[in-house]
Image 1 (cartoon, rainbow, N blue to C red):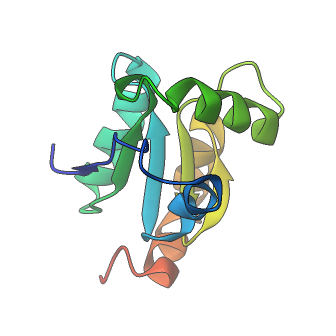
Image 2: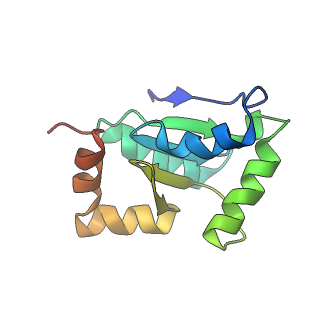
Length: 117
């Protein structure tokens, strides 16, 4: 799979972390051992999208804090995977798959500049 991995947030301050979700067309917050995270990454890569992936378990300094913040954002006990497209929260696996099935995912990706076809 080809995707960019961002795992070192130690040098970033909190406002910068909040902007991480909007700095690239597709941003995925993930845990490297999570099968659902792997499926989401494969979905986007299979569509020709090159998402930026933040592997929370690879950052011992701030990964747990970011995971807790994502759980609060989603109102869920499971924080990952979380997908942002064009800086907007799409949601977790269920929302991304529902968007893919109902045909709204591709237009979102095109609008964000992640797909050109």
